Amino acid sequence: MTAGVKHGLSFDIECYNQIISKDFLHRIVEPLEESERNTNWILDLLAKTGRKATFFFLGNMARKFPELVKRAVDDGHEIGVHGDAHRYIHRMTRDEFSNELDVAIDSVEQAGGARVVGHRAPAFSIVRENLWALDVIAERGLLYDSSIFPFKGRRYGIPDWQLEPSLLKNNLWEIPMSINETWFGRLPCMGGGYFRCFPYAYTRYSANALAAAGRNGVTYFHPHEFDHANARFPDGARAQLGGKDKLRLTILNTLQSRGRRTMRQKLERFLGEFDTVPISGLLPENALKRIR
Ligand SMILES: [Zn+2]
Image (cartoon, rainbow, N blue to C red; front, side, top):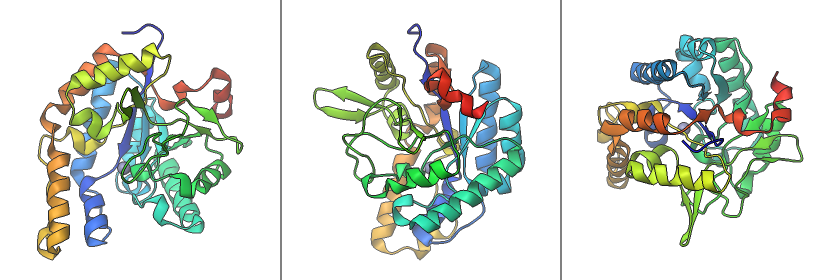
């Protein structure tokens, strides 16, 4: 372990089947039991290893599985929100986002009996065009947002956003996602598909490179990534999709299935090699007074 550097550990708690149903069939369905089972596996691992993390819950997950939020709180984890039904903020008006955020925060706080302190946008959907979302989050009194990817992605990212956490004018902290600065540009690392699909050596290299630069990484994982079963078409989806969407979903499911079988061991290995803290642990000590 690199002395003194701790990386942020976080989980976006959602149901893959539900997101696919919303995105491809435009239908909101209930989260499946498997999302609860996989989240409990994460909670078991953290209990075993004595690590504390941040859990960004979807509001609808909190309503369907309130005991999951309660367990995360009782186990001493930090609680955040990840939207209510995983709608993308860049496709919402300010009013729609405000209303949805209120519902999500209320559902998660009711279920857990603890305060929501952070926000992670679904699919990192805070971009240059909707930075107003950060004001909406600040108005709710949250301590931080952790949604901006400082690189040029196909669907997300703000390429010139600063790499360190920063206190915004609205009194909200932004804790950006992690990227590696390499000789051929900024490359994302430390979470999701970047952790799952690339060899573990890439994550280890990235975590060490960040530490050497005096920066803390921000990891993020999803319950379905730890499921040994491959990503599936939601029931009946295939038959209802046109050719182009069918192909898109096939590609997405293939990518989402990649690396799942070794994902549990990879996370265990990462926790064995690197020190971690909940996301608020990446902020200066005096910033935390607001949540104590
Ligand atoms: Zn998500």
